[in-house]
Image (cartoon, rainbow, N blue to C red):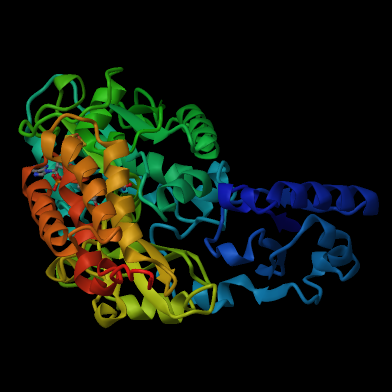
Length: 516
Ligand code: NAI
Ligand code: SF4
């Protein structure tokens, strides 16, 4: 019998370690022949710690389990899938999971993240094996044909980026994985690194073979200790198994990789600041051009892709471009791991083809707010994403559809707010965030964000509100078009959307003079 207890950071934060210990004690005390497997998370956070028992090939779930529940669960016959109020039935049948299309996250929460045997038994390495047998240009073509676009947020076609690096001349080329996941409400990169690290290794090795790069770096944040540990251990296992090293899967072509940790600056998720940080320099933004694809890490041609972009490549190589591009809508092909967070009943990771409406995601899948109050706004795409009111809930989750409504899907973080949210405060937060995180290289962002905080404060205090609203809109325009990178350039999205959709929050009640 196998009992699965997640070691994903979200599950650990909710007490999974104590639960695992209590289960181990119970097994020992009862002399049972049961193996505990520490898996990743399925991404249903309201059920974590989610304990699963494998019974006759099925996974029966119990959750959320507290350490104090364990003894009673064993009394109820958990090892045989016994009934108990915490029993959820077969995990794969839970609607939140069943209705997903899990391609990138197919193994996440299912397997032991550090078992290569588990990984291969669930389809792992099939994509890399195919890539090894192909010419580089054909691998690039397959990825291009799949329609995969950058999942970090910008949505640039991954195959086009790879082709630029393949065609660039250089003795050395690099694959850099941007795992500096910094957007509010996002956790997809972390979940993959902790729950299925081999899929990222496989994706990076394929990228190496496709572009002629022989070295890869995963740049992640120090706040992700469990992801760092899982990635580092998985890289060691992959190296020993000949997946990484001088001859990838015996192909005679080299690719190796390592993990590097940043000190925790939001701007280091911007690709050129990330490169500076990786080179040991201060994390400030470089002007583009030159593009990193031409002149990136140590001035060599470099692919920089987000974790999810790279982790989506193995399934594309395994099942083919046509299979992948069959999911989605318009120019947004394949699947996207939605990260549903904030004030929401059912928060978690939901991988699905592009095209679900925002309302469907928030109301049906997420179950509305956790507080039970009406949804007021949803911020999509991180702290630099726009706030969408309920009136825009029919917007389909698609790069172009969101852009058409002056928003962005970004890294697919969805943060929900109920009707107690004050959108003026949220606009102030955006400007303040930009002021704190600005790398200081360009004026609109460095100075503009601080002036932005002051201007929002004046509106809040009722000081010449009309004049200051116009000034704030003008400042946003300057920041949007005058900033060097997305941090200053996108800060106007939350500010302007808050002003546009929630004008009442920007019209403070006139100060009533106390009667004499
Ligand atoms: P961008 O549009 O400037 O570039 C996108 C990517 O395409 C870059 O890697 C760029 O080097 C590459 N590229 C552009 N033209 C190319 C060409 N002709 N050949 C080869 N490669 C080319 O966008 P940027 O500034 O890299 O990213 C902005 C996005 O980052 C925003 O949309 C935002 O959503 C997202 N973001 C994500 C965060 C996260 O935590 N995942 C945090 C903050 C922002
Ligand atoms: Fe730096 Fe801000 Fe300018 Fe980006 S927009 S380069 S973070 S100062």
